[in-house]
Image (cartoon, rainbow, N blue to C red; front, side, top):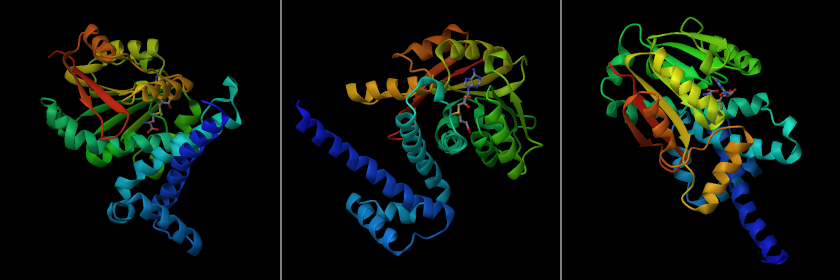
Length: 297
Ligand SMILES: C[S@@+](CC[C@H](N)C(=O)[O-])C[C@H]1O[C@@H](n2cnc3c(N)ncnc32)[C@H](O)[C@@H]1O
């Protein structure tokens, strides 16, 4: 490869970046219920038309589009931040980026309700039952917790995060949603929670947590779960080829998170004494999978 090939490769990838910007603008207008101004609308629509996605953007609900927009923002904003401030010390998330990462996860409860929970013994009934409690490790800005309550309005939630800035953002989002009586927020590490036999479901976003901490959380989560309660470990599923794999390690590593080698996450869950463990796929096209396990009854 020479410099000319390099330029061609950059131009090819820049096309994808710009396509995502146009798509992000179009979805942002749908989600906010606004319209783009004349020229921007026309040019954006031309890009969407060439991509063959005008209809799906126009006909999908704002609620389903919002996590897609958040994914685009999380990638582009964090990539731009990394390029503008490459030094390790400045790699903290700003409010807008933290919100985008949170909004990505807000799509998860619908997937959980429709596709994952029905595969897991009594989990649907557990989440509907009085006193059902969810532990959201890495609660971030609270977007996932709030979305859980949209699916299961009777749920109680405890959300834990070591970043005081994240908890402050979560507090304001939870207040704005009128859910402060249902979501308890704590600044702290997931592995330091002290409850025993208290939760029906524990969620762990391993892509944002260093591996030794994920292992400690999985072990501690077993004690914190009620007998028969479920652990849901979200993990990065590296892309289908060598580049996809390298990119998964690159992006996840930058934020200090874990990419588990094949089967390592499930092994970890089994070694911590969970039963009925299995791997489940994430949404189509998303670089995410889940390992689930149950505390023995
Ligand atoms: C991207 S966020 C998850 C988004 C979240 N679902 C939301 O709605 O905003 C991942 C979070 O995990 C937190 N985290 C990292 N290590 C942790 C640990 N050991 N225990 C608990 N949370 C941790 C990070 O501070 C970060 O806020």
